[in-house]
Length: 273
Image (tube, rainbow, N blue to C red; front, side, top):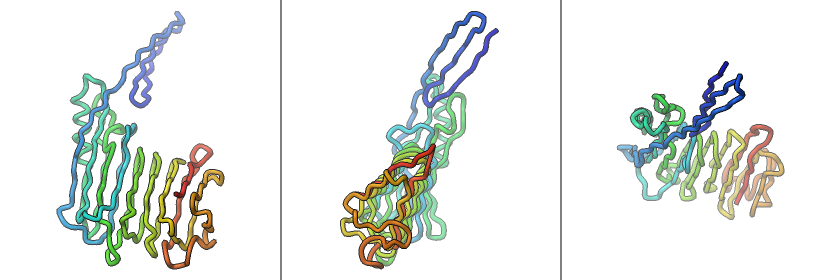
């Protein structure tokens, strides 16, 4: 009597054939190949008009130096996104990986509607050993204008697997909201007067935030295990809703809220620097 099972773990497919009568186990390991296409570009045809910008990247099942980077560039007038596409398949099935990449590229879009800009990327389909969930935008780099006192930047970022990097120190914000579904959040943000900043890690990953040395905020709320919160150079923060925040009221952010959600019994670390 024999039993055959197939288990998939990331890039490795393990086939196990067990003979119960003979008490013998034979195992073979087959590794998938990474197929990528780089420098896939989406750019708005019109200059940014001050409307909200939303970035929605589902990510890939297995990311290698991937994730989402959003940079506020003083020289940018349009929203631009560049992606590295990925699909994984056995080496003899490159054609199937190519199909998944082609479909994932169709999901990588930049749309401008009603003054707002949305950058999206989903997955390709499954073809043979190329699994749809392992395909998509492995790395996306988005460049946005910095905004101004009259056109402040309202930015929302939803990131799948990989590091979420926010290089926004040059921006003038009205609102920044992010959700990372797997990976470090590493942010450099300004303390624009009246702005709200809310960064969330959905799966207990770390959040590291660089702030101006003189930053002020009406409220600072840091949600993580108490022993995993590091205030860095800002030990004078009065943390918690209604506690007072930091600096003179009304002179900086309306709210700085950082949340590393509990996952498997613990949270990630929150670090200010």
